[in-house]
Image 1: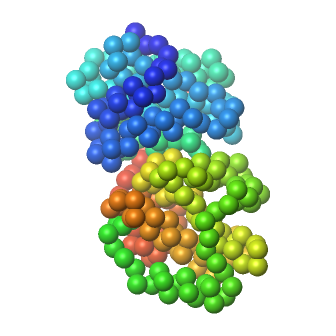
Image 2: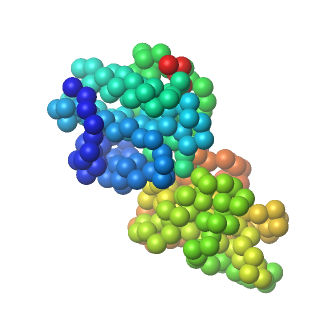
Image 3: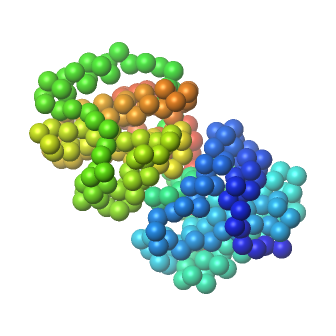
Length: 289
């Protein structure tokens, strides 16, 4: 029997046992807590199997009221092939339809999300999606930055910026407002989550009191970097590279050996700046209800 899920701590413990990939299982509690505290006003669905063998998190897109997201669906290994996953998915679809969704996507509902889509290594999830009538509509990827590598260029780049009057500072309370003015509510919300919270942080590049760029980490996952953006006034200065390295240095100091650049865009930039490599690939599945 599928019902509402109210026990976030219990969901975190379940995810720790149900998620097959070590990098996900290690952050299971953080994942559950993050999805349980989405942006204000988001319509959400939290479901659990009555016997405690599975859970699903779903929500309505903040930008498109007709689009529902099944953000996370997990079943304990010993309970698989018993229809638990299918029952959770059907129940999530029904709840999302009742909230106005006309189609459902298996994947993240930014800015608060667990993954962009279904990691291609989660074979049972891929099989469930196809069996339930979902079609692959997009692909996304994460890049991995090896935090055990140290760049001799980092200090030189920061010194060069300082010589041009640009300082790198911890973000202040005015940063989300500035981010919102250029990139919208989504990134501004992620920056807000990164301020003053353990395992997260944000830096800005400033010249003559003007913010030129920002970079954040830990907003959704402790080991994930992003978002990051630079204003047109900062083009060609190398601000993004310096901000990126500052964030990764913090994650290294926290004991992490690798960081995930979530939903990575400019592959060439991250590869050149910190030697990051494409490592996680996600298939995004969509279905009309």
